[in-house]
Length: 150
Image (cartoon, rainbow, N blue to C red; front, side):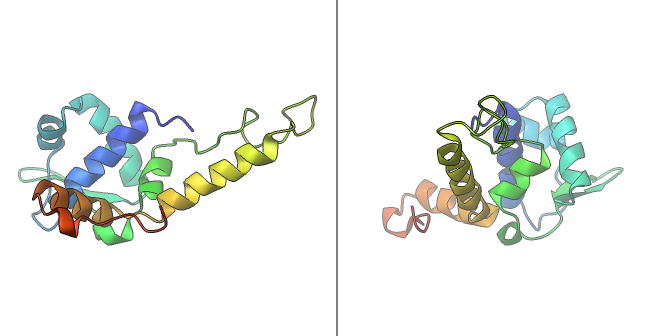
């Protein structure tokens, strides 16, 4: 799996919203400034995130975006798949037709890796990443949250 800029930026922007959860709507311009992501790119990403129900928007003065549910209920996998990132390590895109219409010798290996990555990302919520970031940033090395099973 090669995570593209689209996936990285979507996760970063959603983490920014998570850090500001409960403070009302956050403008994409604010996220753009804080995270150094193009505003037009964020607009494209948030269109997809909104369609997938991960964020809600408010129009007008004081408008912007906010998480549609708590950061503890949104996984990194939710975000990545919402922006159409593929979590597939097979050359055949999971079709099992890699070698003359049949699975290649390593097809099951790459399929298994894809499943492992998917399970890993499904087990990490935005809230978890934010707590880990905050504890690391505060310098309290004893309270750094480790990702379970990794």
